[in-house]
Every structure is written in structure tokens, then in C-alpha cells.
Image (cartoon, rainbow, N blue to C red; front, top):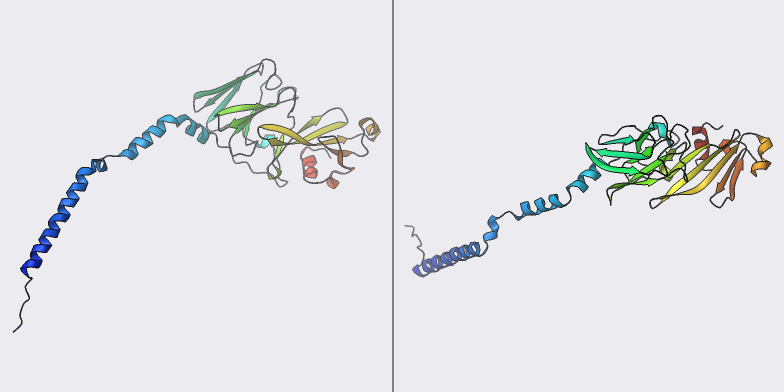
Length: 265
């Protein structure tokens, strides 16, 4: 015959006591922590959204268009779009004022009566690009009717505003193109019937600084008058000659492709 072992009465009392103590402990913790039933996360998110909604929206709206370079690594001004999903830019008739609207709301007005944004007269073109290679949209205004100078507006993500670069003075930003691999900007144009000049610039903070100048003199009889010995001459910012060549293909770095893009051969 099998005998069933029954728990000793003393053990039964101990188990009951432990269970009671555990139940009381849980109830004490719930009473001491009423905040468990609240939702503080919702409060934090709401507060943050109220302090910086415009800044977040602006920077999201200011993403630059993805424009691929050509086979030579260059992007000409004509390859950049003239419209943007979030921005519209209106230029006054005298080209002294740019009114920028983002998603239907006024964002910024840039006005300078002494230094127009481009040469006035006719319709001043506007292109959208990433001119300083930071991923945000920048605005290129011009060239105007005389094609002598333009203005570049750089988006500053910290201040949530556009900052002006270029005017009637320096740099003129004529014949503009980008070389993203070297983070260089090129601008240039004709100085005379036989002279064409191109400047390669790079950013130092929010300032454009010249790095190299290329001069092409198409008439050999003008070499001496322009202090050159060949058709193409490249000088640094101190006007020291870096290279000279009769043929563009013999120039260093990306310059042969730049010359070809400007159709200077």
C-alpha cells in the first residue's frame, strides 16, 4: 500500500506567512509610486515641439537637389534646377531685392540699393544648388541682362537664414560652375576680345576665397602686353605662375576639363 506524505503543519504556516508578506510589499510599492500611471514622455515631446518647430521644418525644407556632375566631374549653372519644391524667389525689377517664400510663408527679404543682386533689366534667372557642399539648398541669382555679375545666397542652418556672397564687386560669379570632388567653384568670362579669365575658388567658412586664376590669351601678339608666354597661364592668389601651356590638355589638375566646359579651346 502506498502512503501519501502530507505537509507538516509548521511548514504550511511558514508558507502562508511568506505569501502574506510578499503581498503587503507589492501593495506598499504601488502606494509609494503613483507616477507610474502618468505619461511624462508625452509632456517632454510636446514641450520640445513647441520650442523648435520652425527650425526643424526649415532645415528639412532646405535639402539641396541631387544634381550629378558630368563625365568630367563638373556641373554647369544651366544644369541646376530653376525651381524648388519648397522655395520661391522673386526678384524686383531693379534687381535690388529678393523675396524668399518657403511653403507659402514669407521666409526672408534681402535688399541692397547700393549693390544689386544682378545686373537689372529683363528677367533675372534663379537657380537652386548646393554651392558650399553642405547638403542644404543655396540660391544663385543672375546673371542679369549684361551678364556681368551674379549673387550667391548660402543657407546657414544655424541662423535659419540665407547669407549673401558676391556682388558688383568681388567675386563677380560670371560663367559659374562647380567641381564637387575638389569642392571648387569656377567663375569666369571675357575681359577683352582676346582675353578670357577663370578663377577657381574654395570656401573658408562662409567666405569664398580665390585659389587659382587661369588666363587665356587667344592672340599671340598680346602675350607680352599681358605678361604671358603661352596661350594658357595659371597663377596662384599671389599672382605667381603655376603652369603655362599652348594646349589646354597640357594643363594640370582638372583645368583641361574646365577649359573644355567653357568652350575656350
